[in-house]
Length: 564
Picture 1 (cartoon, rainbow, N blue to C red):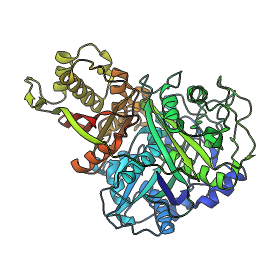
Picture 2: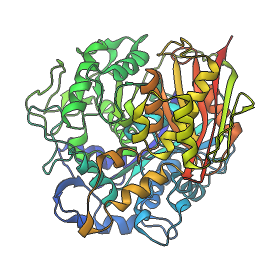
Picture 3: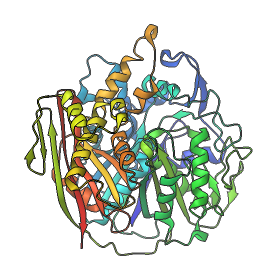
Picture 4: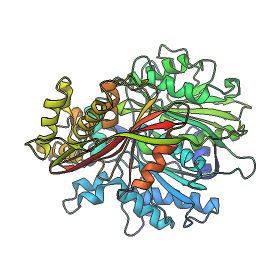
């Protein structure tokens, strides 16, 4: 359990949490239609900062994305009163694409685009001296970052965590969602019968958490991440991963205490339908449900943090905020939504969220937490695989191949796998993680019988999905040769590799993807150990999987297991 001691929302609706809450309660939205923005041929509706707002946040030496994140994080840290430079403070950045705008700058190096580089820049300006972490787990990144903060603080590694979620919009992200036919030209309508798709948004939100309570505070009681093991860009019709995540955080809770479930509510046909099914399957159909995308659009890496902060502010005001854009229920699940604000006297809620790669997350947040002891888990590693452009080693034994570089991965697939042709659709990062995991599982024993809900896939790297980013950029950079590919865009999310492994093996446990600007084995081990929670995760496929290009890559992964 961890405790909120300060927060901030910086969005087109305001620069503080209070300003944002007042705007939302008044029914305001920053969503509007854009035509030919960034040279895009199709119109779209989004919530974007105007030029004056961008200028007011700009910090010399930082990018637009970094300046936005810093503006939010700095306010929250100042409010908290903590010493950000102390060695008991960790900075966690949640983002999907970070500085991806730089990919259009021919002078920008790959390292400038890496999210871990942005995290370091932001952390340095705040004064943080410990290694910053970046969570890049598609649209659930914000909730994943909160879960990570909870684990690190409960494990006693840190006393404070600064969790900042942020994303800006640009030609890269908007064209990608347009290629998926997921974007609406009009304001979105979550869960509505006539919903046509999502809107995108820009924002940053920050929560400063403490390991110990300091008075009556909001607390994250529990958090969980689970995978559908169904499809990398479409949610399970049964809401498998979302149901498991919700059940994990509410299983021991009195759900009559819940004021509401704050849903992801993207206003896409399949997401809203899936969430309605999952809410019912998790036994929460009696709890009011709301969604905030009608005010902010989908703010990507900021969404999980922003919507948690806004939900705390609403519950403090004894209010269940309206779902803006909702009119008539358009999903099969019998969820209770309203286009008007409602009163509540309850001080507990669930935040749920889902994303590409089959990942789903949920947290239980309450004002009156029941203290519980966290039992530290022991961990051991069993099997190990290391794979580079010139070397393949499984459990200490070299495997001989004639090929080197990218052809080596296909040679491994042909000799050691061969029965999963979807391999040929994957990007380089996913191919690397996939064949390395196959070698690892063969060392463990063919389909070893590990319970599919007990095994997690938790990977780390430095270069994110830079290879896939470059490939997708080639399809949109020239207006006269503009052909955005949905298949290429999906792989610009590095966590897709964890989804591919989950799908292959039908793992419904956690899938998470983290980044640092340099490899830190000790920190990786701390995170993996903290992820063996003694409840939902008993074993992990985990480690380093980094793919810079076809000649520079490394997988160094093992199976980690909980021991008594």
